[in-house]
Image (tube, rainbow, N blue to C red; front, side, top):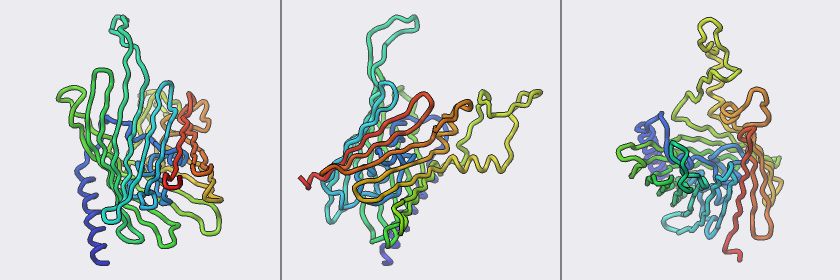
Length: 348
């Protein structure tokens, strides 16, 4: 027991040292790494989850959820994003008794075709743009309650004649209670750097993020509640938009009227939170609902708030396949549809 405690302590110290050296602010490259790939994760409102039930589609979102029960499982995901943009992944798992469980996945995003033109409007055909990441996920249980995991990401980006190559890792830890109803996870995401740049000498940072999640499955009711905290590395996620009608402007000075400290604190706190609930009447069917406050605040239109920030979906089993669907309401201009299919090849 003492040895396991030392391993956990060393792991947490490693996470802390990485967080202390991380840089915050500015724009980031490889933003596709922050998109939700699993229909289940998307339906619950975010791109991270703390649910340990042997779902291989969660491996990219949280590698410490990888288990030996995922052995020989395969998952495919497709997301119909906006216009000609689509993305997704394919994942496969293998487990080994002595070294742990692995999930290899290929993640991609296709931005579609574009017309190539100069400043005078002369066209020269078309070009395409896309980005890819080969992920190798690993996890191992320290005991019946704690597990650790990591993703190694090899990233390649091609945007017209510009290209870039990079490496990143995710490091995560998960705690599961003895009754397996309560789960918590901590993850340090996209730690890495560009190795080759779009423009020589212009290195861009990766979308580093610290995430923490909780989930609780009720004992006497078929519900599982999830709470995700995003961007723990940065407290203030707000910005002032003078064109936003909800922002009050002083008629004399034309300056933005500051909100009260309590209002600012509450707004900042809520921007870090994503809440979700699953109705799980059986292992073969469930319904999911999520709410992302930050997404709603950034994408809403004051004159028509609609249901921006909400997401929903469901999953069900058909023979040897488990199918999942999610509908994410991003903006009044349109929504995104997520499709995931998973199966255990050993069952064939």
